[in-house]
Image (cartoon, rainbow, N blue to C red):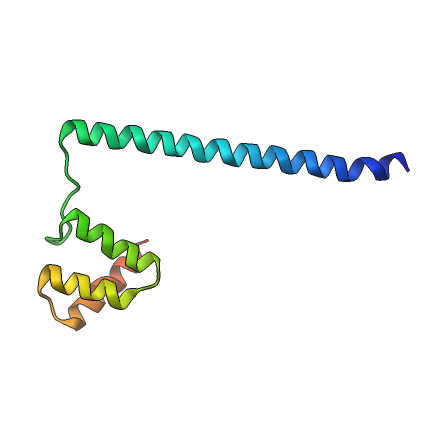
Length: 99
């Protein structure tokens, strides 16, 4: 009976340890990203233009792709580049495949 009472407690302890580890890893990643952002800002670096697309526009296109809004991503790409719908869809599909 004593072992049967300890199993739920052991499971709870393991779950808490996993939660603490995951949470601290997330904070570490956030901290590193903030530091890199500060260095980039300090150096005055702008993100590289990809295929002539400004970094802000590219970030918005990526957000659309990640949110499964490919039609909106295609529209943004066409506005940024002036390419046809077929070319834009092909570029979006290549971008999706590169993730």
